[in-house]
Length: 112
Image (cartoon, rainbow, N blue to C red):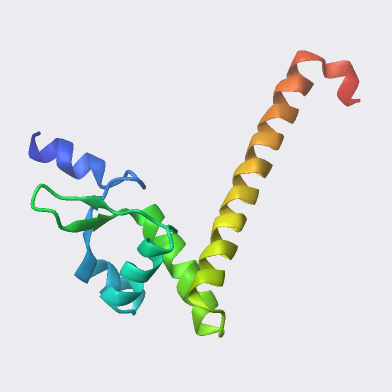
């Protein structure tokens, strides 16, 4: 991989660019918190060749939402479940909107 390829991947929300230490620092939390939400299966960080956890921007957004709920007093397991359900709902709404657009473009008179 060339340097240009590596820099291009930094725009990818799913590219595991952040170490555990950097991720914890960015979120203002501890590495233990990141391990806990991993154990709760909220996020599964990728591993470097050396076995170190690496997080993507998407995973950091999910972790930030969990931290917000925990900071409000929600137990970590419940916070993780809430975030999972929120993410599933968002995905279902995106799919429904896409299906509506497809159906409307296939039959424009039905939408009117």
